[in-house]
Length: 269
Length: 314
Image (tube, rainbow over all chains, first blue to last red; front, top):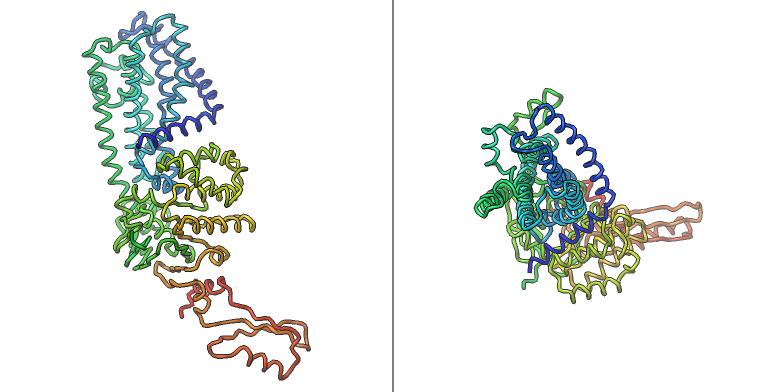
């Protein structure tokens, strides 16, 4: 059973990320600073707008959305691009290529462990704090289960984008610039830094057909019972979109990797 | 199953390298350059290695050793020629080929840095789908060969280089692969650790009949482990035979050292036993002086290899 391989990798990933427990504490602290910044920024935005509701969202709505987006970012954030380019430059990638698994699935499961532990260590505490502070602004019920499904799909989409960019870096031999571009695009267009409701409608229409939304916006909508996720048809649409991008990005990534890995195998790593 | 673990026939590997120009202007021109040159890293190498052999794969830096190893592991695709590892074409069937090989690169580790060694072992056990019973037997075998208790529960990052290398070798053998590639396993190790590692490799080879391909620059490794050696230089195979045979490669040289009664220093004579008899030389000495002391030295593997690398062809 190949599932044994996956479980083993997830297990090792959890253990390894727990080993760096101080890192988690630092992340939580950095979040705090970031969120204070976000708080005052949006407070100013709402104060200058003169109304309580901007683009259909109250100040509390916006804050809940952004805090949860940050918490989500902490555990969805991946370093595939960095790690891969570093291991290509040092030649260490050969050890991963020599594992008895496809490189893609090896990488995916290797990172999954740290996602699990980050979810428990970073997301769950933040979620509980937000829940207590906002006193019931977050619905508790079936939406939590739906959210979990959405998060798993979001992670697959995120991994798909990461792997495409990482593969691209095989050609450029320089990673920094491309990675920054990728991170900025993802953070802006996914709803992680600005709720998508704040974009002008024409741009929002375009963004809603892009894969980035599937990483942060859709799981958050599902969690907050918004965006039509409370109806079966609406939920099916959101999940369908995530699933669609999972398939597209995975297929594209596998093909692109197959072509590119030939480049390494033909011309040396 | 066939008797051969590895078959390479007329194996070649060319790399395309961009011709880089000098200076800033040149670097900018290089951005648009299509001016490639072809470098042959491996030229027409044919080697067959049987199961259970320990083969020393030697050559000076940049000779093409790593390129060949990468082709055998399936990471590189040969430009031309035939290659079979355990009956598989490695670059076409990389994942399956990987199930039956083990690799140690002396300068990097495949172990999980932050985890105790035993956790890396368990992970590898699951990755390679080793049944628990075989895993337990392997650990038992390890126990009988080396003292693994002190390192088993230590995290890899806390290990000394020697302990880490030892662990990496154990990890490479864990799934009982048909072939293990050891790329400079004793690099940077002290004398006692080197000999421990050599004993371990010999022991595992004997117990499991594992084929071992060893690249090294340490002739001590070669003398201790390999019966057969293959030497390549500038991409071409220049030697493939027994290690005993190597010593007579440049003729049956021996060094005769004598100390005569008229002074205290040793006098050295290099004798080619094919043309001259050692006894005649000694008799020659005895005609003029009284011989106080005699030593007869074999030419060392190191000296032969050095001569070979420096381009001394036969």
